[in-house]
Length: 549
Image: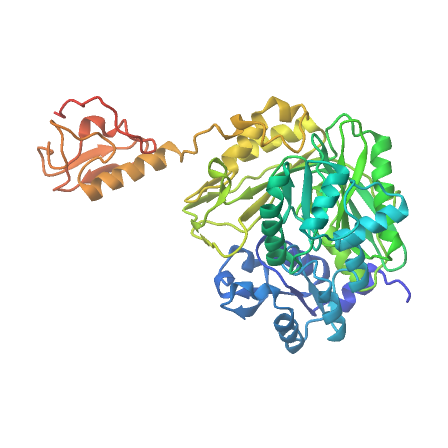
């Protein structure tokens, strides 16, 4: 097969339909590349709950999958609809079936180009046990652990050999799901059942393996891209150390950690290139490592898909990884070389999730009542949010990806700090105020943290998540008008729901700046305390308020 040029690929795809078998942020991101770079028709899958999502605006067509929320995993349904529509290529995005090695096989059988690698290479790298054994054969260091999947008795035997603590990990997938840390033997049996159940639900594979749990480490990954002609390019590292329960929260490139030297960076990139070349892999892949305080790396997994955090690599290098991934799938030669692809910026991403950090990062859903996005120099925002959108409970909690980029670590700290202050999302709980607290933390700013940073820094959760004062005051006025009294003032001997009443039939006042507001009869309010109740509801105190005049 001879390599095609980008111009040939663009001519070949112009006006053709390419399907994104995904939803939300990844679907929107990929649809933009399909339209902008290739002049192709961007088609997006959508269940009923996603037909009116903000992400759907990026697509030129929606391929409706029906009312079943799990339809994004139904490969037979998706491919049959794709064939009927005349789809020439399918991009799996991230999550859902993106790492299912049956996907490329089913696409090939249907005469559709899978925008990813082959079934065989995805299995060899995407399966954690297979990737671990491959790394051992190639001399890439791995964390001590089992050579393959184990049952409970096998896990006990491994623990006796390597000691505690250990991690139970899902064989068939990544993203931090299906990982349980075991610190005592008494925890093993219950955790094994939970981890296996989660792995089955997330990846369709309940098998687990065991690795030693490394304390005080950095989570560092290398983005790799390869074509069908043996060319491989490795980008600089992404530091994904700030996480909770093995779920990434903040990603940075390059790492601001002083231990990340040029020599260590090149060593990790060489390990990543070696793994990809060994299985003739083509497309995007990410090789992930844990690195100890003294700079010793251990390979932990390979993700055979587009990563959530790919945007910071794009911001660092000024490239479009999705464009290159699509072109490579259709036969283009790798466009990146050491000579023409140089790093230009620092970049940081925070994942704005619809979760409540102060309540164990509990996901929440509901209507977004107000939405103001940040912007300006050095900002990129990939979002699936807008004012009036009913954020659904059916899927993950990812709302948007906020990226700041600039010429230094100090510069992107200032840009991100400004962007987080500009960003407003009301109506549902998000991680926005939590990230503002992280940006203020001196340990974070000095890059002196490890994967336990969030768990070991309780002051990050010490904040008040309040709406703007004008919004809180407007809500208070509306509530008093509806109920006829101020529900946030203690009732007692001298004040009740019915007394004291306002002496006039109407009450007028002005919220500055703004128009005069008139509350009609029979509104009764505790006028003397109205203006002191603009904050969130608070418990009653023992003090009895004096009657209003």
